[in-house]
Length: 171
Image 1 (cartoon, one colour):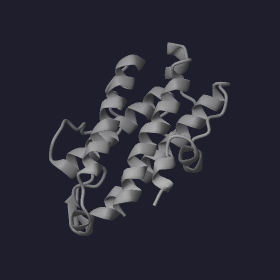
Image 2 (cartoon, rainbow, N blue to C red):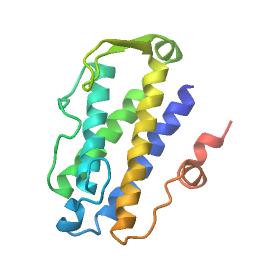
Image 3 (cartoon, rainbow, N blue to C red):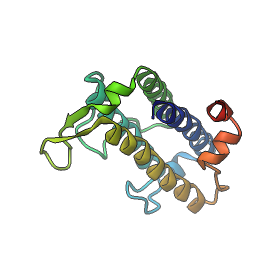
Image 4 (cartoon, rainbow, N blue to C red):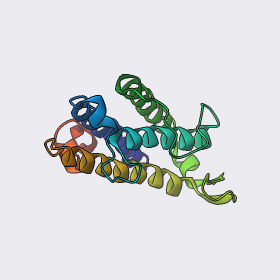
C-alpha cells in the first residue's frame, strides 16, 4: 500500500501542475468567474484544495496551519496560490515517504469541520479519501477550465504513469 500512496502523492503533484499551468492562461476575471463548480470559480476550487489538504495534513501530522472553513479564500491572487500549492504538494510527498505499513494499519482519530464528532478509522482509509478528494475537485477544475473555453486537460492516472510516473511501474 505504501508504494501506491507514494505514487498518488507524486501523481497529485503532477496533476496539480497541469491544472495550474492551464489556469495561468486565465485573466483575473476568468479565474474568479463562478462557473457552477461546488466552490464556484476556479479560484474557489483551487483554494479549497489547498485548504482541505492543510486540514488533512494537520490532522495527519499535528503540524501546520489549517483553516477552519472548507471555503476559506487563502490566496486571492494566482501566483501566491500556486506557490502555496507547490509547497503543500511537497509536504504531502515528504509525509507519505515517511509512512510505514505499521502506521498505515493503525487507527486514526479526527473531528470533521462539517460534523464535529470524533471519527476513528484505519489511517489507510483516511489517506485513500485524501487522495480521492483531490482527484474529485481537480475534475471540477477541469470542468471550469473547459467552461471558460480552454482546452481539455488529460489528468488520468494512466497518462501520468506513461509520462512522469514510469518509475512506479517497475518491480
